[in-house]
Image (cartoon, rainbow, N blue to C red; front, side):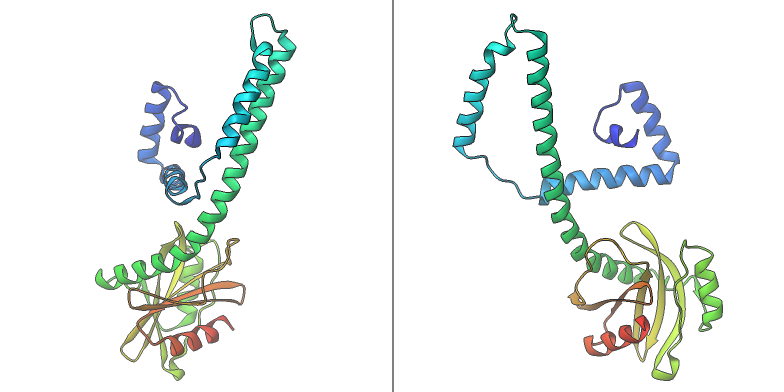
Length: 244
């Protein structure tokens, strides 16, 4: 009922019941928020095209042609034919709008993922909550993450090359829990978000957001997204080592 509730298609009593449920159920609340966000983004970001005047003329002409069939004397079968035809046309238009809107939003989502990763990195830094498990031992960090996620991320320490594993935490990207590996290189902290590859198009391999470099790569069956104020060349080289 979450989708129907989000669209305002439930009665008052059922709506009250659903609102109470959403306050207690995190999964349903998250689904409801996703629907609300999607609707807002489609309205704000999906392309909008004004129909040409000629289309209005054709529609009005069709209405005039169909008018006798919609009169009281029209046969029931003809009335149903026009109603079904209109419903199918409306469904087709909705599907086209959905496909176009989804394509646009997928592109924006990939761009926004880098922004979200930087925001998460900054929040962890300012909140002094870089790691949930503090260890440089991959045999400690990997089982800790695997027990709390539905996948097992690869974990390696590159201290010999200057990239020391500090630990890890569970964080969120794209509203999904994700492994965040934390490394230190000299005075630079690096957050590496590791998750199974997404079905969406991949974000840019390198991007700068708010003064932070964001590097993306895919390898070893995982998506790797690293955020740091480390220079782009060294960060990119490090992510290449990680994905291999």
